[in-house]
Length: 457
Ligand code: GLC
Image 1 (cartoon, rainbow, N blue to C red):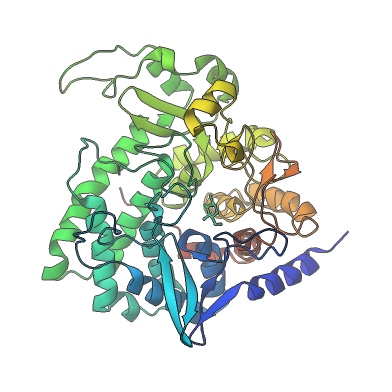
Image 2: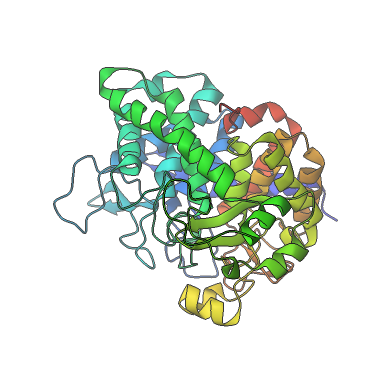
């Protein structure tokens, strides 16, 4: 059996190999370095994928690459209103970028979703960017970078894109399907929890980062107006636990006006009570996957729920209930590889209708109930923050049994995550960095402060 130390050493070597350089400076990491499969866009640096690498570099005192990343991605952000409607919107951050050489010069080529499969714009990229900018300041103590006018403008433009007037009556952020880590159709259009949790965290971070000056005043006010209604909506109407199930089960429908209890007009028949009543432990609870008119998606999505704990979006009690659920439904949510991206998978007709019969997302594969080792770092941070490090230890031990031997796959398939993903890349950078980051957090919980938030409201 390979020792933990050896796994870490090999992981570091693999991570170093994934670093990309622009004009001689390190600026990011590529998504995967699998020599056996065509690269497609995995040879690019994705903003969301770089987060785990970036946090790790910050912990290791290698802040320069993170600073360079923040600077180059900021330059890619469109700063003016586009008259051409198929160009990326003002304020949007790219999903990914690559370095191209032309006439012996190097250029950065962003992908805002305009090249990606499905052509979906990433709603999460800008939110992660803000969280990284904050983490950079926390780790280095260098507040001057965030205070620079170009950085302030970058934050403002991301927020303006989020706070813009729109066709919606809710405080949540309205996004298309596949606008986040799950970047293919999965029935999460509207108000998916992953985006809402990141949105909340980015709003709180922005209040820390935005300098109170006349230029920022309207944006700061917009953020302040949004935070509390957003928080309430998420804590109250997304929340599912045995008590809430009882309430929803007996909901009255077709209520009109301000006093309506069932604001979203959820019909009891649309909720899988039979499954939920059996699956939901008495001590557990979680935030539902999505909420909208007559829609409450009861699937459990990991990024949204773990980020909710990390950002103190959920109350102390709710955060513990989410971790209780993970502990008590361990074989479903963790299984042979931490952890499921969502649970349960869409099967048969549901899979066909909801994913557009996408074969990569068949039941218990890839985004549709696959296991993604990158989630280990979020699970570790959420557990450690709540004083439940034993969950993280246990999960890391499971991951360690396989990751190196399996060559750091992107994801695993099967109800228990036993099979290496059918189309998974090997040497997937965020798998490697996620593992190393989890180890660093366990070794020194002081690093939690890079991404966690105290409860404010
Ligand atoms: C897949 C994932 C996406 C990730 C990308 C690069 O498209 O769904 O979340 O950013 O691969 O790893």
